[in-house]
Image (cartoon, rainbow, N blue to C red; front, side):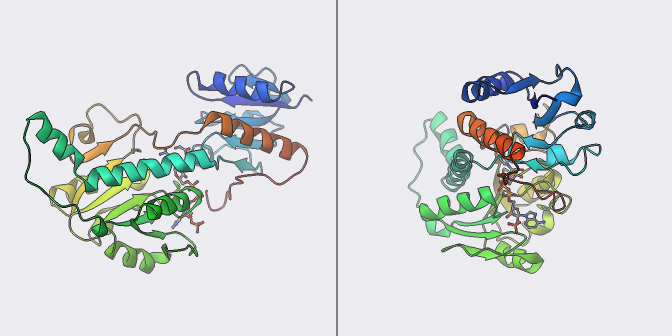
Length: 311
Ligand code: NAP
Ligand code: GLV
């Protein structure tokens, strides 16, 4: 059996990956799904949103590589082969750009840039206003690989940061909480709620009205985790009653965001199209290769997913 990799991505991205991986290792045999020939040849699948049921067709699979940080697109496949390890991307380039997305949007909301852009379009010079940066208190949901990087970046620019995760962390200058009581405590001191949780049954719908109501009135919500974590009608209700003042969203329950979705035209919501942090091809290709060599040489894997926890 040839050691072979099947790759499934969208658009032209697969070609870029194949080129870069072949450049780094010309001996690799890579086949682009669905033209994979005999599925028995394949021992590694590199995937982003593979149609459900397809992974089950590879009887000799040794490793599934998620070409993203999230693995919900793999774990949601009820037919995925059992017992095959799954790895995901943990890349400092991605973490840095995620930090930039949160920093940019917290400052856009805090400094009310949408309001000032509107005044500018009407050539209105507004009265002076002081922005009290000390009033910004960020609470991060999810202190994992990305959440910790984001927390440290926000702290480094002088923002107050705290975080919540399944297990408590020991981070310099960043208060860490866990459990439902810990979440409530954090929410009472958070006016910028920043979500970086993985999509699991336990995190689905976690940002709802009950959570917004535990934050100080006039707070903000930012989500770059997954769309399923935000109860979208609850956000609209909280925006309408003033409990939440604004939001920045990168991920949505349905993607692409449907044309008739109210978020598109809501001036209180900043939107980006699920690209808060992209996988950085040159770095990711090296990480993928490292894991490919590791599985073939029985070495420890990078970014190994705990399939029981779902992330
Ligand atoms: P990670 O390293 O697996 O971290 C996940 C964090 O969430 C951990 O701190 C974990 O707690 C916490 N967590 C999980 N379930 C929880 C629960 N039920 N209650 C409380 N905390 C819980 O993941 P990551 O690399 O930071 O990535 C996080 C997510 O970001 C990804 O899964 C993906 O959905 C999203 N993402 C989005 C983009 C984008 O462009 N929008 C890009 C990359 C990633 P413990 O530390 O205690 O285990
Ligand atoms: C993107 O959403 C990722 O999970 O990497």
